[in-house]
Image 1 (cartoon, rainbow, N blue to C red):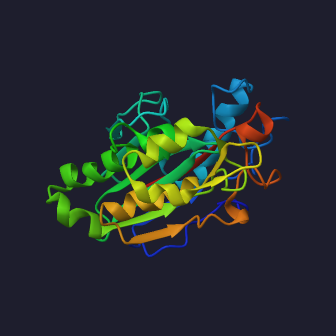
Image 2: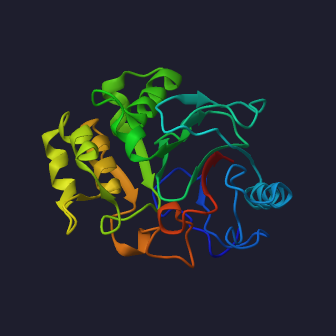
Length: 259
């Protein structure tokens, strides 16, 4: 795989493979340069198709690209699943099928269990992360491990390993009162993830909010994004795509699959 891509540093079982692309290694022209994997952002479709082939050949698995809508639906993938199904998360037990989410500021979340029998990916923007009534995309994907793994939900979470990828950082993610309320209304502890900004709004820690949600479910093994500047998509323009920074932007992909 391209040496500029991110290989998660976590204690997943050997048969579990994962990667998060950067903007390096593709053939798209500016402002989508160069490994844009999104068909919906205005890039040349032949270039996007070529970039997706590069990804597929690099991981030796079939990535399945979702139609992401900032919701909480999780799709069970098989080798027959077509691209473009509407969901913001996916899960599979089949080898050679890569659970894939596209991002350009939102948080990519990769999950597996200790046995390495299931893998999942989630697209966690603030709307999907907050969800409704404290139930969001992360709660839905963890529930998926209970459903597909046929284990009790209370016991499932401690068996999970989670990797958080790059996203908009806490010094760049300025939000209004409605975003803070969406989290704090269901969890008072979420207030610590919001700091007043100079403009009268709030600076939100997206990866920190995800950690709180996961920990509340009993997930203890959380790796990756710690909120530092090296993980911030906005602050690293040569490495990461960022919709908030550039408005017209490509998309990266986080993938996880069973070898």
